[in-house]
Image (cartoon, rainbow, N blue to C red; front, side, top):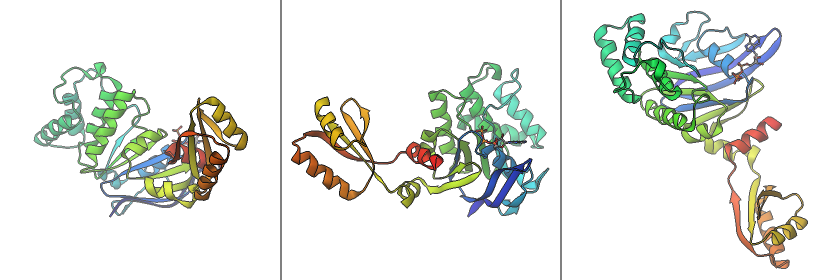
Length: 302
Ligand SMILES: Nc1ncnc2c1ncn2[C@@H]1O[C@H](COP(=O)(O)OP(=O)(O)OP(=O)(O)O)[C@@H](O)[C@H]1O
């Protein structure tokens, strides 16, 4: 079942379209990556999902219920994490979660039990220092605990790793993988390696439109990106240059390595024939898989 569905959602600011005819759905207990460059419309879309901005057209549903602008009841199903969450620095993590529990009307027994469980999950159970001494990664993990306090069906994270160092990023990504066991996760990002690491499905947003979506495999195998990439490694720079003269469109990727883009399967045989005819020894010839970064670069160039 889909936990979040957007159907033909559009939004303009001052007559300038920012999100256009957006439709996608997110499966229960999956991690959905919402990818786009700065200004693509990710935050605007998330704000509409949270009822903080009205959509001009279309419909958004969370757990089958329509999202309304303003105090939308659908937010009871949602936990939200921003890129740089704010806390009261003088509190400890347990005190802060207790405060959040009280504000949201949980009983002391319920927030104590849930806080202990969540601090264990995010790896902060034994930390009794004040939040002001936390690293950014620790703050992000506390932000996830806070967002999960009310057992939401959906966790929405806006660029959750963009302000973190590689260690902090890895910790947060591993945590999101754990969270997926009981909560669906939607996260926006422009860090494509994060998406490759943890997402089940993804959508590329470009200038307010979805230009590609599906599982990583579906996207990589879509006819849009069917061209092959071939990489050849030579024994010497001289051999490399001889090949380059025969295939001027080949690109340097390392001192003795060249890459050919947008090739067909049949080109491989052609290349092997040329190598034999010109007695050009190769150390390695390889079909490369498109990285998400290649696909994204290709999509935003179109
Ligand atoms: N309240 C607003 N009024 C006018 N224009 C806005 C408003 N909010 C966003 N925009 C514009 O809408 C476009 C999309 O912005 P949005 O913040 O949704 O992009 P984003 O994909 O989240 O980018 P980033 O990664 O930079 O946050 C941008 O051109 C932005 O300037």
